[in-house]
Length: 110
Image (tube, rainbow, N blue to C red; front, side, top):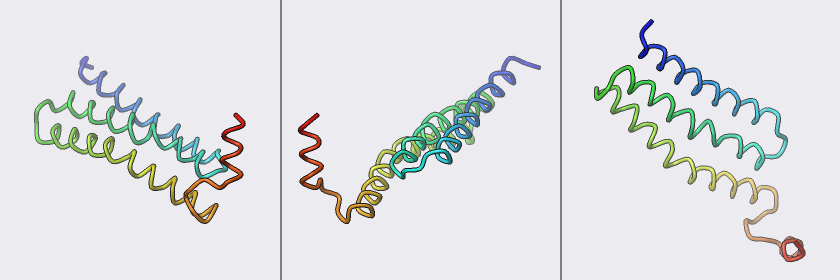
């Protein structure tokens, strides 16, 4: 087995493990905002490691360039999607996204 194959296997294993651990965290958490925090590794670490594995296997090929483009797209759009999801969860829970007066008092007390 070549060094390249070992590196690809390690990158793929780490990428898939990060996604599986993120899924386990989403399953364990009860609150929507807590679950949202566990989606970050699946949306950042996983795609980057998988794109790196493709680049090691197929350097500067069409597949390698597409893998990098997809990983960059996922990493760039994830914060926007997470923010929109958090805002929707807050609106569903409280009826609006702005702080309520009693929440503002709780924040000032800290």
